Image (tube, rainbow over all chains, first blue to last red):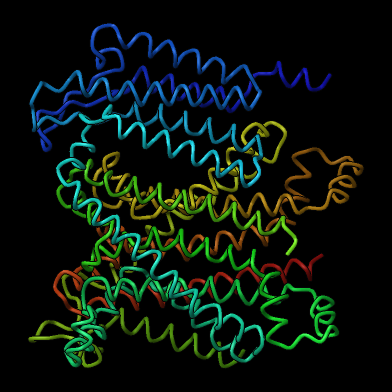
Length: 388
Length: 246
């Protein structure tokens, strides 16, 4: 009986999201067409932006999606509806850009407007809500991520967005984009690898020695309070001096600006979560288990590798997740000291007040951080479910 | 403990002296400069920049606390239950957004200056406070709530007299974390022309003057540590006062 009431009652969250979407679609521009990148553009609503009468079917799909989100409480239906709304909005903005760009025009820019962003945002939120209510298992979450990534890749590869402003910025600097992407990966993953290589042994030592723990932990916590921009900058000086004093170090790429100080700073930020989680994970291993291991005649080393580390693994993985997500975000700041990465586009864009360029740097960073979080969360949960 | 207190007092005195009369410290920073570049940032008063920096953090944190605690209470009531799954998902996803990206994306909406920084700090600060408010309210034992109900307390009385006091330590820990992170993140605001200590660091980065980078970074870092410790001490004192009263 209660279930049926639940099915019939309107969904307040759905009502809120649909309301925001409807207001945005009516009041805000769907795209902004500019004759070139710098000047102010002409805002166009959903119907005006699309060629011919194509705006009406899109509006109808969105209206239907809004109504269903309010009335139907089944998560599967809500997910499908949100996906359909998102697809409609994304395809429509591509069609609008294509229709508004004169053939062969290289300077015109069609940027997505407020209505597009809000409609896409409420669709994504509705999809997130549906997924959250499904409470998927780790494999299901990875599956959802793969589907989302595949759909995004298909959309980008199809050329449906080719005339949109930020894709034009991308087309103009595709090779630089992938170079900075690789650089971003090197910064985030390289510093993580170094932090694991050093943080794991340090965490094990901290677990064994309370004195080391009391000395190391406050230091590592202190490093975390140094603002990222300052730490990047402060490390420029010693590395610059090192390069000046040792030609060999300079030849190895150790310089005051660029990759070296950025990697070192990210490594320092990464140490605390790795060391702390290793120590906490090891401390959480029940004493009865280690006693039993010792009783079976395991040496300290065997006890560590066969019992303690496998049991602490999920906690360590959680630390690695924190580090990777944090480093992907912080690596954007590396661009300020010539370290490269997606931050290059963000700061270039801020400098030129070219928001399309900012998007080109910010959106991949967010996507990368989000995907890493989903994957590592799922991995940590899977590790927890499977008894070691 | 006594050594730590003395250390902190010394740190406060040092910070105050540096902000009041930075020129006294010129010999300390001079070795870090090259080609006779200035050792102390003089384009603006360091004290005023610190006040502006902390003011931005205070406004954003205050707003974030009010909104996050309000939202946390709302989604944990029956009326807000529809919003619970999504709000938890947003907190998880939101924390993966890099501050630089949030800041840069706020610029087209509100323009350059302090406004995008306030928005980014506010949004970023919401997450830990909301998370802790929810966690604090959820850890209130069901038996306690039941007996409060049995005593005839209304939903509102239960919230104000039972749930919030029990959740307070966890909520305050969230506020403290949020404020400390904001102090660091606010430095990035200077890349979009917000007034604050990031200005000093950026001036150092662009002119290759390590002395500027170091003094900006040190002031931010020391302030963050001191405020963290101050908030922690205030929390402990409040808890102790309540415990002795009860």
